[in-house]
Image (cartoon, rainbow, N blue to C red):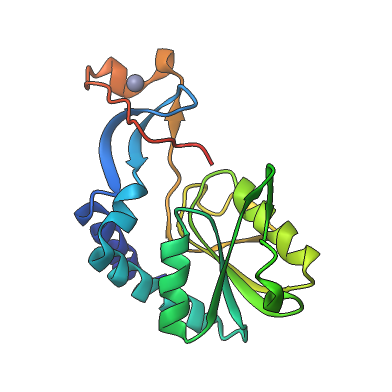
Length: 197
Ligand SMILES: [Zn+2]
């Protein structure tokens, strides 16, 4: 991504208040200057539409052939669906069935197809790994993995490679006792939504 498109993405995230700057307590208990509120993304379809336009440019630039865009339920469904619509591809989603990420039985056409994975935010890579596993069970050839935001800035590898992202932002998290924002007396905010992934 060029600097200007990174700036454009950052501005879009800030505009829809999906990216907040301040002093936040994450669910891990650590403190951070940045917080992603991904609900804001799907709450504002028009803003998401512009973000997904940038995402599909990123996907098209890789030039891979695929049949499906696949996303994990629930937050990423709107993102993956919109990407599939714009790319003229089919869409499918995985969901937890008895604690295991899987396709429900109705998705029979996914078997043996080619797919790209689209996720909202990569934090630990856990849910993307689970989607990869469920696609492999269906003998799907994975042609790419894309996220809107890579909070690890490329540090987490999936299938040995960094994922494609619109925004790669290393979010530093501090133990409360060594938090510079606490020291500076910035009021602490505890967001209500889960930050875990
Ligand atoms: Zn703090």
